[in-house]
Amino acid sequence: MLWLYNGALDVESILSDWYREYRDKNFGAFINFVGIVRKEGNIEGLSFDIYEPLLRSWFEEWQKRAKSKNALVLMAHSIGDVPIHKSSYISAVLSPKRRVALSMIDEFVEDFKANAPIWKYDLVDGKRVYAKDRSLKLPNSGILSSKD
Amino acid sequence: MAKVEFLGPIGKEPMEVDIKNLKELKDIFRDDKKIQEWLKISAVAVNDTLVNDIDIKIDKNDKISILPPVCGG
Image (cartoon, rainbow over all chains, first blue to last red; front, side):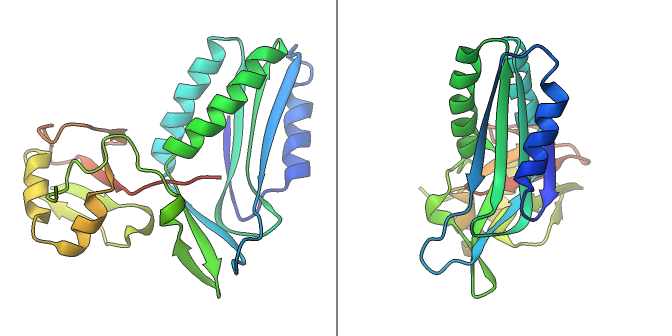
């Protein structure tokens, strides 16, 4: 399941909802990751654009992979501005036994960073500055370029 | 006409193009220096699936998306 929210995530509410929803589904492990916007340099926060169709297909592939191990992945992400010390990203893996969830949360978050179609901007003086240096090229980037 | 959309920070308005494959789109962009800076680091999706071949056939109702480097979370 994938949820997108405008602005910062209400972490307590989202994690409580997930726990209430899945605690009686016989998953023995519920491992979650909460990303919090850090104060760095002169930024006031971060801002995000998302391309939802591709994000959903990327996520569905992960859900299939999780289900093949009797696990479940959950994810929430912000669209737009998120101030420092608020959360923009939560993900979780539920599995019958702990090893699958512990391992999969690591793989999931890393693949998310590399392949989820989300663009990050620093908020500086109220303006969005694309975080180009921290961004990663998607597979097969450059195929339309005429430059060497 | 196929539609081309430029995602995230590229900041270019969508455009419509009459092309038979992605190679023809590459030719359309050949002399656009500003978009070339993005194309060299951007991936391409056709109808929301990432592609790796510019010979792929494009139909008139197709949607082509240009995706610059990503950073979620």
